[in-house]
Length: 97
Figure 1 (cartoon, rainbow, N blue to C red):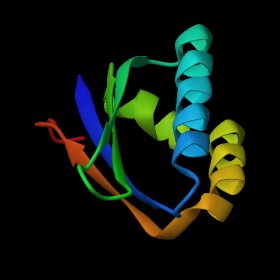
Figure 2 (spheres, rainbow, N blue to C red):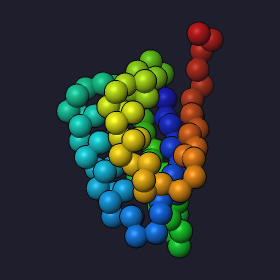
Figure 3 (cartoon, rainbow, N blue to C red):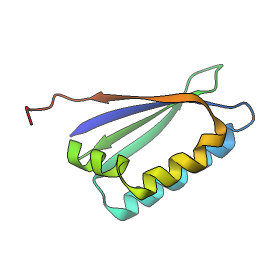
Figure 4 (tube, helix red, strand yellow):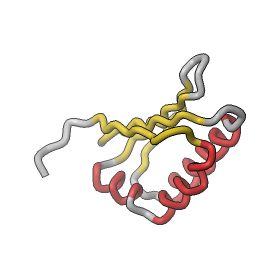
């Protein structure tokens, strides 16, 4: 099991759009059974910074997702409402691969 934090700064006025995109992507991932166990969206109080916190059944599932066409398509659609470059952080104790 691994957890991933993805951090995004959303342009002013696009918060609801970002939140809606998140909900659609999570629904699609859960339906597709690609190894995502759960996902939560957090917003920093008083700011437009969000963290998407996901749980995956393993590093291979997460890597497969970020290399997928669906991930690239989502990033492409969201790029117009994001400020700066997103940051990602992996939270896991991984065995040597």
